[in-house]
Structures are given as C-alpha cells and as structure tokens.
Image 1: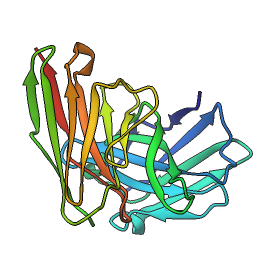
Image 2: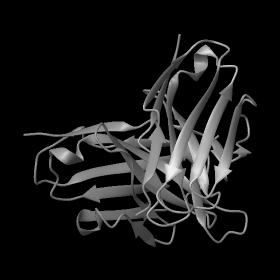
Image 3: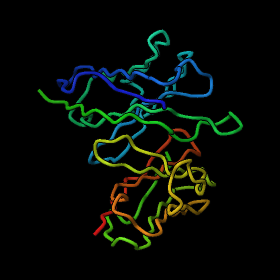
Length: 125
Length: 107
C-alpha cells in the first residue's frame, strides 16, 4: 500500500520560506506513470492545488503561486519537496502531498489517488 | 481557471437517507471530474472518477453522475461512517481546481 508522509516545520515566520518534504513508501517515486503533487487546505479557500513534480524534475505550478514556488524531487531518497517563499498569514493551511495519476491513455493527468494525512503549517511571528 | 461551486455547503440527514451533493463547473469539463471524501486527521480518499466511475474499494452506495457543467454525488442509504466533507475536482484543464466542499452530518 502506497503511503505518503510530510515532514517540516509547523510554524514559519512571515516573509520567510515554507519548506516541506514528502516521503513516499510502498512504491517508487521513480515511475513514469505518475506525477507527485502538493495541495493545501485553508478555511477560506478550501482545497487548492499547489504544484506537481515528475521523477525527472519536470514541474507544473499553480500560476497563482508560481512566483514564490519551487518543487523538487530526490529519487535517491524517494521523496519530493516544496518550497514556498515570502509567506504571509494567507499561506497558513494544512498541506498535503499526493500522487497525481494519468488517464488510461497516459496522456492527461487526472485525479489524485493517494494522499498524505496532511500537516498544519502556521505562518506567524 | 475553472471555478467549481458545490452546494449545499452543509447538509444534515439521517441514517438510511439518500443525499445528493451538487458540483457546478464554470465551463464545460465533459466528465473530467472526481469526488473525494475528507475526514479530519485522515488522508482524503477518492470516491469517484470520470464523474461516474466508482474507485476500487468504495461502497456501492456512492454514485456519481453528470457531464458538461453539472454533476452530482449521491449517497444511497447514508451510514454514520459517511459523516465527512466531500469535494469535487475538475481535471479538464490546468490548473486543477476543487470545489469548496460540502459537509455531511449524520443524525
């Protein structure tokens, strides 16, 4: 059974960089069939897709966050990471990592089939 | 971005009731829609894909329908374990977007 587990600070100061990692177990991140993504949940905006990374390092970013965002992959550790810079209180959220799968044709990314349990990150001084 | 609007925001129903949640897309997304179940402290779980496809292992009391802009998730024979928040997600276009959620309370 695939499992994803986030790690990182639960408290970040305003204007600093939020950094999280997601460790994947029960399967290899080095797989051409999936992307690996970050999603967050805020009380005001609900669920928001943040961005995805492929095992090759190729990425998709949400345009609303792109300017501050970096997502990377480390296949040797079977994990991927999120860095979000210049954070404000609006970035306070529960952050999830998830596996983003392709449709049967292998052409289009569709839905997220495995998720982590989520980690709360609070932006506050 | 495609906006996904769910209704109602909250609903309360009794065990055994049939409940329906609606998700409306701001533009035609064909059937490129998934539904998720979220319970606090747990990993969100995909229930439906392609609007009406039941994910493996999901009870058959869950069903989905719709295409274009209007979609529904129904739970036939509500169970106490179905108390959760349900989200729709479109995957017709990047960036992938979610509805704001519908919380189902079980009396």
